Length: 314
Image: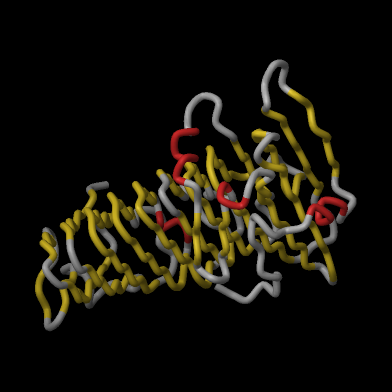
């Protein structure tokens, strides 16, 4: 992930004054009758930018990220518990580079704070928030413009996340989750070459689909404990490299039948099923590895758990 130059941000420490920055369209708060919930929206039209950096930091609730309507740079909508949290949105633009940060600040006591810190690779959350994922849970919806090259960083704690990123122009992507259920998909092609894609998952259920459409140069996945599926289907235009590291749990790797793949396995006490692959030297590779123009070279490091490898039919 490229250095975006953004300051270190933490949910409990970002100042309220950040809300006053920029000239975006700001739709104020509207109380829901008889509830403690409020709603917040902020949006901005595209204009004069060459690049965009986005950070989304969300502790608990339901998170959705997807493309915006034509003409919009971003459209952020949040439903939050006003007795515990306050929405934070920071926007700056300089010399054609825009920087957007969306997060929540805890309004409660320090022991109830939710902190998500990308730079320190640290995620802390109040586990009581796990019980809030019901019909009355908070929600954060972020829609991003698809015409501006974007570096996207997402960190969530105890959340249900849906990241539908197909059709965007992502030059970099970093996703971190805590105790969460997350579905990431590229149902359409990423319109630019992605330099670096990094996924870091804690105790979670995580599924990523159509990763071939992400058009990444370098991919890295770090998993802790959970049930993980990485599906590399999609339209492969250029070769890429990947490194997958898994701690404890079930890992499924899925590849399209026509993609040339080589897996360098570095695992300890883990079951490994590589149907459709042949052992060659220190790795496993598909029959078309030597002749293919587009290839995926994957380094696999797993300690405990089960690993399955599947070739998907067209």
